[in-house]
Image (cartoon, rainbow, N blue to C red; front, side, top):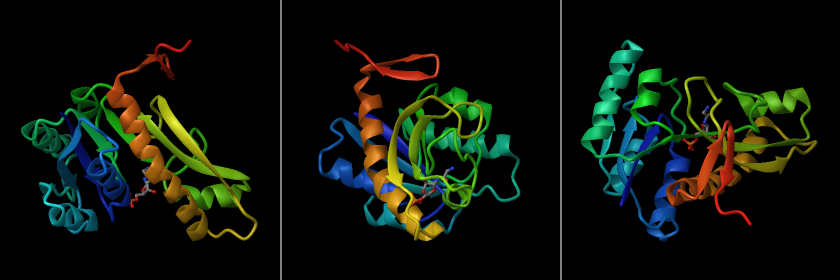
Length: 203
Ligand code: GAR
């Protein structure tokens, strides 16, 4: 079994999509080992508990990043986690954290990177006048919203869109993308050529 550790700070809809994919056996060989949040009142923690999954708050407020991350890493090791999925974890992780799980930390971001890293990116895409938007699942490296891209899914931007309507359209794709990206990484059927994630055994 490949044991996944989920990190979240909010409602956890991406986490729920991953949990649902596991329940429906669309991610064979994977299980969620623990759900961690830096925010004790994150709704996603409650959902995890209701699903019978170990869920822990490790509050970050007022703590040094290195100290908080060390506690997060220890919790992930305690739960024998093989792969870490950031699912709306709204906190930058330290290089030490990245090195603790080399090429085993994934993140989902609601834009087509490298366009619009950072926060409120759906509103940024709209204001910029982009005609397509989407989401990116990537490996986490030491820079923010930067590691090698595993996959992206695209949606149109409509004239009548608001940040809310565009976010909702992207979120539907996020839920498909994250499960697909986890399956690809767990399969091991890829290599990284620099930043390029490429499938192995391509004819
Ligand atoms: C998602 O849209 C995710 O892409 C985004 O936060 C939301 C979390 O929603 N993540 C980032 O912006 C990270 N830079 P969720 O809690 O319902 O999964």
